[in-house]
Amino acid sequence: MSWLIKVPATTANLGAGFDSVGVALNLYLSLKVDLSEKWRFVPLSEGMDELPRDEGNLIYQIALQTAKQFGYLDLPACNVEMTSNIPLTRGLGSSATAIIAGIELAVCLLDLNLSKEEKLEIATAIEGHPDNVAPSLLGGCVIGHYDQEVDWIHVPIHDLVFLAIIPDFELKTKEARAVLPKSFSYKESVQASSVANVSVAAICRGDWITLGNMMRKDHFHQPYRKKLVPHYDKIVELLDEEVYGTFLSGAGPTLIALTSKEVIERKLADWQTIFPKLNWLPLEVENRGV
Ligand code: HSE
Image 1 (cartoon, rainbow, N blue to C red):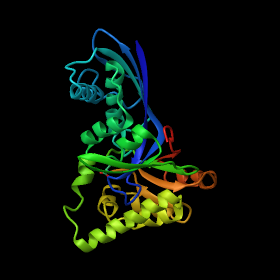
Image 2 (cartoon, rainbow, N blue to C red):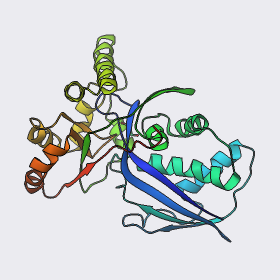
Image 3 (cartoon, rainbow, N blue to C red):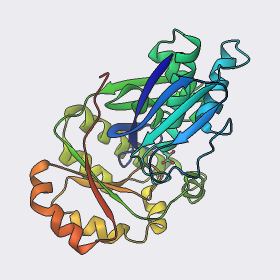
Image 4 (tube, helix red, strand yellow):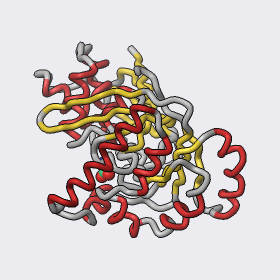
């Protein structure tokens, strides 16, 4: 028996939708799974060399955890070839793809008949928030809330370019969460949530100008995290007049500019010349399943 599993990357937050809004993008983790004598994870893409090749692999750990939730003690051993063009530890949801891939692996191997809602509950309980795992599983844009269970709304997004600006350094989510405030005053909470509310309304209406404006007014995380990304202000300033808005993708360090194909054709080469060390990657929304 052989299975193929393909899971898209994601960008989370979209400015003020902290831990709640995420979008699937057209970069993928792909697994080719074949039954075998023993577990073996074979990395076939650059940058995956440090991933564990045995049962220490996160994908296996998640698959086993899922299996146990349904009363299975073990999984049949497999050879898993892994290919990925998702940069690791850059804020593009690579760990969420491993979580979704692990759940899908258990589903394939044990013939579990799980609905997308059941998969989403399992994935979100593992991740703690739905903003990466939900779009990775469902495609498109997902706006979600999690507290014991997930409430979510699926919104397709079309005709937008997500220009990822990826630096050559990693930023661990734990480190990027450590710089956030422990609490907000009532007044700050009202400000922060009202920016998030307008952001979500703008997403639902496809009003990218308003969404971009709200990205500039986020209270939840970007003002605290931008010191971790030395080029943050320079990039935002360089792009500001041309794009709808620029935001820190997930916990960073990747920045993403919301823009159009026309702007990419006209400006991308100039921007690459000004910041040649950054990897400028125009991406599209993966709307499968929406
Ligand atoms: N919403 C999360 C954060 C995404 O910004 O920390 C990364 O897990």
